[in-house]
Length: 259
Image (cartoon, rainbow, N blue to C red; front, side, top):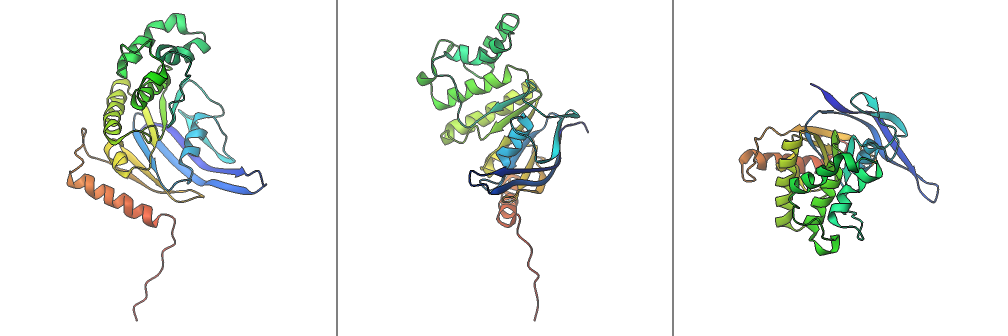
């Protein structure tokens, strides 16, 4: 097994404006195999997004280390693409220029100009090159955000609840788009979600986290073939198991006494 990503004994503590120490992550150990789709799921505020930020190089661990292909992550890099819940597009730029922005900033636009159209087509935005973000739906803007992250040819795509603000129908369509893109691009994807069904539908592995300070409660392998049937008995069983784990995650077991 080739592990492209490792979290080794990672702890992350923040200091509030009042000087209070808040521990978001406590002793996180995780190995992620190259090319897998991983979903991080757990209570709100448990540190899921913090894990993505550490892997993206936007923050550093208080203790421990994060590795990508055996190289310690210490800063952002083009080998990792990050997509947020809000598309964060520049409203004054066209969709084409939003997607091309990273290439221009890195001085690579002339060499890779054709890639912009290719990635627009990949995410289903061909024909919207001259449109502005305010002219497109939320789902289409999120597609543009995906293309902007993918155009850097990252080894890992980090997704911080990118579908959370979409309506149910658009969200399901975008889930299928993510699976299609992953298959075509052969990259590792790590996604934060609060939606248990979404995790079971997308993931090769589901990482269930405890409340803050977060640890990993359990890692579940999802062995269902793609495309997945949401009414499949194994799908339903996995969903129930995750909900049960989330209900008891981080709780100390209470011994039972028979009198």
